[in-house]
Image 1: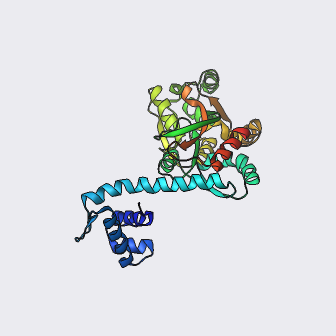
Image 2: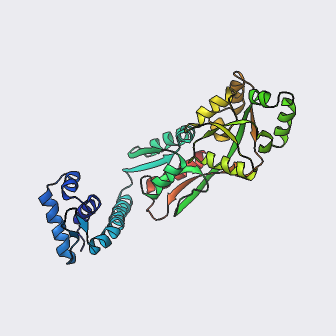
Length: 315
């Protein structure tokens, strides 16, 4: 029978390849760590480490290292599932969401969730789409929220609501680029938002790795244009604020406007600073579905299932 404590200690030692460093990381003595490794070698009747300088893994040690993470993950999943079945009164739920989308969505969900399940510890991992996908893949989060499809292996999805990416264009940009055709260009964009019309305009974009940026890149490629990108940043609210000031054109999710409760009031507020226009894009890539992702290879806790239920009810 595998001793999981020995296995945990072995994995740390196998990753560090230094018993002294591994022992410090585990808060045990080096002699104690050596004893655990020796016990595991006796259990399997193999040598796991070449006691050389530097320390190296034997072929058996390399094979066990590959399996150790899987075995420990399986143990943790089993304990989690059984604890969940036994008593859904305490627990932990980690949600992955982008900074801005979290501001929009979570205030609608978390107060209700907290009221219904006050003993569930809630944690947030905020990052861009690439970081969230990685977090789900490596088990750092239980659920991620974003536009479908998620670009990570072995992910299950639950559609939540429709989402649309709008094009934010100020009159100031159009006046600089098309000084004698502003109203004509605005009329064309209102009836048919063709990005090729704006190929000579400056663009403000969110950084690579964000889903809105990925969709923007795809729409540029479909339109066969190379945009004049004059600024990139991690915060989508920053690019909108700069677009409002007439610095360039950007893409902005309609849901983020809806978070201001009254879209028309939001637009009126924007127009107090400058004449700003929001256009629906013709590309099907600008019209998608917001969803919740979970790892199909991991046990989905009752806490996660209840979060999904509430999200579907309120969004």
